[in-house]
Length: 115
Length: 111
Image (cartoon, rainbow over all chains, first blue to last red; front, side, top):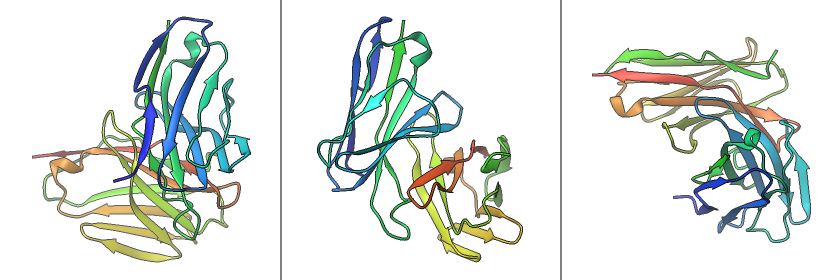
């Protein structure tokens, strides 16, 4: 079983609030990812990291930011939440190697609702 | 054209039948593909990985990669109701550091 955790699992928050979604993994993986997924829809990569102090934007434009100060921790921050940010946010991690880079372990997700 | 394309389904098969899920991709240089399964309300989990042409079998699952035709398939033999889920095909993008996921095919196995 993968050891990757996300908190909170559910969050309902008002417009304009600053929020941070937490993601931690205990597997020592260098690569970590944030995806956004609406119910029944595609997974979209919004941020990724190759290691400490390395972050990149993904394929889907996002107003969120990320940081990677420690290998195990990859938080995502929204400075000012809007209703358009309502979605499911999934964190994942992977190791390197022929298969490892694509074998991503997903956390349970954070369901965010902005009112 | 999307980098990885799948028929969204739903694909409905009777219990015990073979379910065939397909995926096409646009990057001719791609050599590795992954199949993830996502149950409703849950996170994706990896079920198969295939590298290079040919077939790879794991239990009831067989993944096939055809580079000439640029498609990947997943066969599920002796389908069970517990196989009912969305199956996501994923391949490399931006070098071998990121995955691009297809939209997923929803499979329904009925008793």
